[in-house]
Image 1 (cartoon, one colour):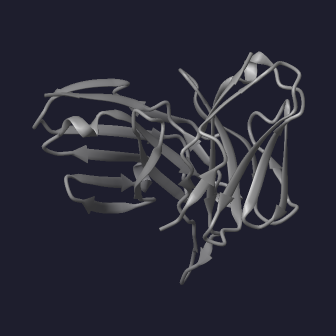
Image 2 (tube, chains in turn purple, yellow):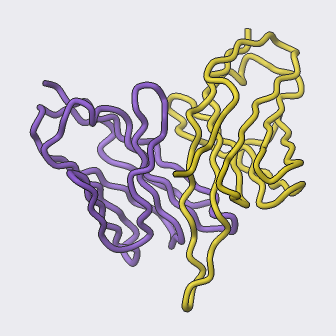
Length: 109
Length: 120
């Protein structure tokens, strides 16, 4: 099946810093989503981005489908950005997702 | 906004019990999914369904079954709960792919808040 690798596995930032999270995948995909899992375990949709670039406030994402990677940018990080960020991709019918192992982000005040 | 509701946030059951986890979505989505999340293993797909009474095995279906009698509801069943099924369970839903000008446009999945299940 498709492989999804996220880097870095852990990231510690000071409030106000910028960061880039990376997601590599092993095959062409029809679906790519970025999620934030908060400390209560809730998975929040950040972006649906199988290709191109999107922005939402301090967050933006870019997927280069031909090169099989996606980047999530977080600017001016805040303590509420802490949590685990997951990249998930879908290739087969029903758009079932395969998840990476996530990046654990800690933003310190 | 899409609302995916899981019946319990926390659940404690005993080994050998039959356990039902319920998931309801309010957006008339065709696809529904059950995942489990474990430390170091990420989220893994257990079962999914793309229509009423239809089901497909995911990556780790052993020890589980599902039921989809109505479009809005997808139930995960642990036939005889075991301690290795202690986990976080997440339900998701999505629309079927939509036909665009040349390609099928796949649709994002929306997740419920999760159920932390402990089997003692």
